[in-house]
Length: 246
Image 1 (cartoon, one colour):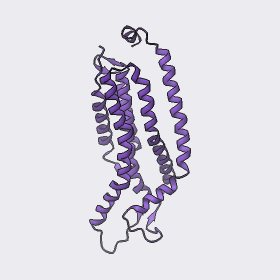
Image 2 (cartoon, rainbow, N blue to C red):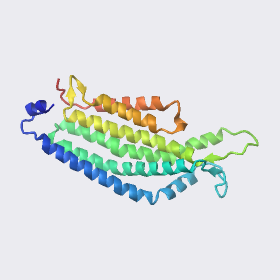
Image 3 (cartoon, one colour):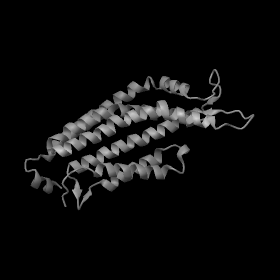
Image 4 (cartoon, rainbow, N blue to C red):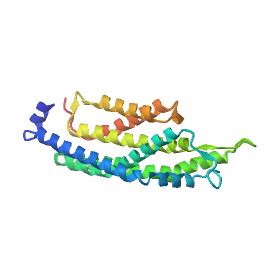
């Protein structure tokens, strides 16, 4: 690929661009650590507030809400911290990706990149917020309206309830990162014989992460969700109007 780049961009310094990419990666990694520390101080209050807006009969002191696995709850808590940190960094990732790639793009490619970055780093976080604030409460409201067996006391597992929202959010975040990664590989000309280099690896990693990290509540759907997420990421990135090098 170095020879191909040299033929197309004779003044293109790959070492300089790799150094620039390394600097951007270090900035994002440092910002991720800072955001994880920031969200770790408020995650407990956020979880408590969210559980309080759910239309569930938990009792005046939440006596019908239980945590059956304290270690699992601790793991989920930190997963929520990482998720919030990633969501907070998506706009920064968008800006850095655009500033890094835009100098070498044609106007049509630049417009396409802006559209994809807006979708993956702005619209997706808004969708995730709406899912947590509106979608999941409505889901539980419909579930409660369907009725329950008479004389049966219902107790709710806080971990299972919270993990549903976490799983949906995590799938959307992984999809966003996969779409951005595949798009950047096409923008940088990493295409061989009409196929994006590292495409299969990125799609396999994306699907594998989703399959391995989705909670037990999604057993039976993990593989389907992982495959659909990879297919959609590949489809969106495949619309990139770039010249294919064979």
